[in-house]
Amino acid sequence: MSNTPTPHTPGLTFEKVWAMFQETDKKFQETAREIKETSMEIQKTSMEVQRTSMEVQRTSMEVQRTSVEIKELKATFEKYAAERQEADKRLDEYLQKTISKMSQAIGDLGNRFGEVAEHLVAPGIVARLNERGYHFNVTFKRGIEISENGRTVTEVDILLENEKMVAVVEIKVKPTVHDVKRHLKRMDIVRRYYEQTQNTHKVFIGGIAGAVFPNTAKEAAIKAGFYVFSQSGDTITINVPSNFQPREF
Image (cartoon, rainbow, N blue to C red; front, top):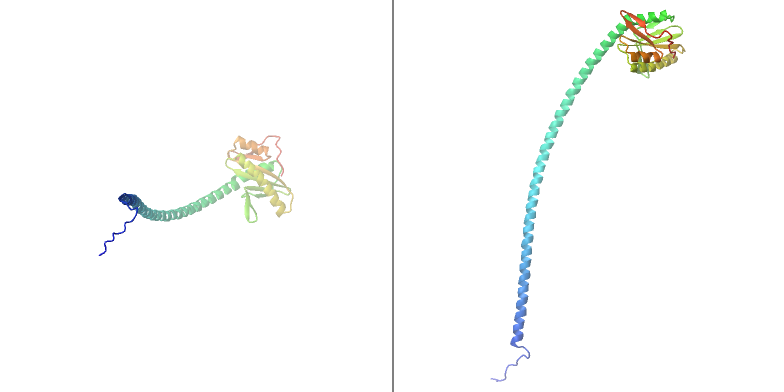
């Protein structure tokens, strides 16, 4: 057996080996610390994920509840819409019936008013005007209706006529200033109607008759150049100033 000694690695001492162990231990500790910190971050992230998941679940439940509420609200709205439609239908039917009855009542009233104008008012107006020398020989005591293009544009209560002149009289229970203004427009319509349909150029005068004639309406009528016919007992009188001159249209 050889007695040759084992070669010794030069420079490797106990101190160096110890230092290497210490350095390695330090790295292990740092790695362990990093692993611990990473583990804590992972746990924290896991908790955030759990909280987010819970929030998502709560949100999902809220969405489900909202969806149910929306469905219920939609059903309620559809029910209300159906009830409203039925109510509108009934109201429309009621209004149609009411309007029909009112139209019939107004028509009946208009007929009765026309009869009053024909048998009571018109004769007095004709008599008073003829006393002033007009001598109207054609009378429309129930009035006329003037239409243009198939549409009624005005109605005349009493129309009187002779060879040269036409009198247009409006009858109101209680005339107003507005009635006077409307009669001014009516005069132009009647004159235009005669010119277009009869090719005549007669003189037109107007008048307004009332059972009760307020002073404001009376003054407006006289200012407009209309005869004012008032009721006096059972007769009709002309209530205008002595120097009154009717306006010719």
